[in-house]
Image: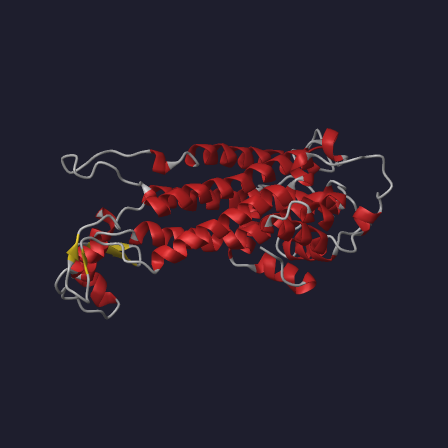
Length: 364
């Protein structure tokens, strides 16, 4: 109720708001965008502040960006599969046909699509390795489960944004006034906590792939992906960043909806904390974007060391998009700008667009 009240105060020309970074009065804020204060009619004030609008709006934005994130996650995983000389066997569509979760099917198809015509992968088809580590082999199952979670979240959010969530309700046909509980945010709170976990798991498995890329005992690549181990640190410190973000997500993913503190003299004795869950979802999403940026940076560096062998159509396109703005790490340099640059490729959609231009649309 409090966030909505602050918003409506500005709509009425009262309260305060930021305009171009400056805190001004509500009336000044409206004038800056050529708007007049609204005059509320009967019940409109209560309807505007007594509902699930904030948690639902934030939730929709997080969900939208999370859908885009799933494609990026598949691209990052495919890049790591190439750099670590993994096998495509685990993505055989017959595996998913006998466990036909939609997300699993979509992810397996994406990895095959991305790595199609990979010279790197075809160069070791007869190697003695039986199977890859879980963080590579189980990408369809892990990424796919998160995609399926997004479908459940979409269902709830779609219902909520088309619903009446204030109280009391006035029935237009007969004029009855009914006091109920549609303002309670539990449906949104639960799926926001579900979404938090689904996004966080993408970061968890990505960090494990980063670790494998940087550990020469696991990767068959130069230690920390530098040509001068012992002298240069390479990308060693970037895994610290990823690991820190994963640990932060483990705190944020605690279910906000499990908490409730009674207010209003115990009349309002159970609340959803859904807005907190939605805001935490946004924080987790941003953290995972940076984790995936570190993975893309590391995997592209690893693929460079495999030349003249080349990656597949989709993974090759991803490498080209990355290398257009981030050069190969020849000698140590500050890694933060490189991570930020790849993060921006994700946010503005350039990475996914570049890949889909090469292989067609990826599945969710």
